[in-house]
Amino acid sequence: MRHDSFASSVLFAALAAAGWLPWILLIGPIIGSEAARAFYLIGLSVLYVAIVSPRRRLTFVAAVGVIATTLAFVAHSTVELCISLAVLIGIVRSALLYRAKAARAVVTEMALLLGGLLFARHLAGPSLLSTAFAIWAFFLVQSVFFLIGGVRPQRSVGTHPDPFEEAYRRAVVLLERTEI
Image (cartoon, rainbow, N blue to C red):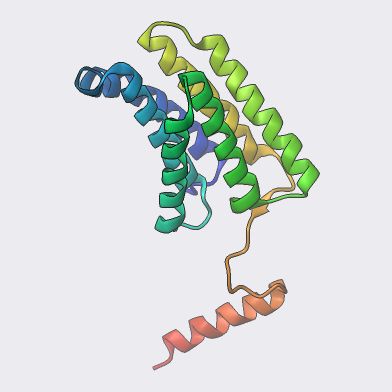
């Protein structure tokens, strides 16, 4: 199954929500509920970027983790942290991972991130279960990204701009590898 698809993103939303209760019940008493919530949100953001990334690069995911952790130190509340992490996800997804026309990318990200945050806020509440529903809601809305047309993965560094030439280069590499 592809990781950068609607189905895998919906599955991620469900698993992210399901993981919240065990996380807060196990880690919350040790480091405090606010810190546990912040770590969980940071971890989810980094994991989401790693999963939807068409190319798996540990250094890229680590850089997103450092930025997300820095945002946690700068944010004064959970709301600020959620907004900051959502913006980080949007910037990374549309500026670095996938290509679309600039205006389209901005409108798409604004709609998805604002819609996800509003849906999550609508379901959020003081209980642990409502927080799980809010996490599910945000990432469920983010899944719609893969249903929108006109978005394709960024080209890897070192690929040829002409698709035919790139296919030819890959075929030559494959044939050279299988020669006896």
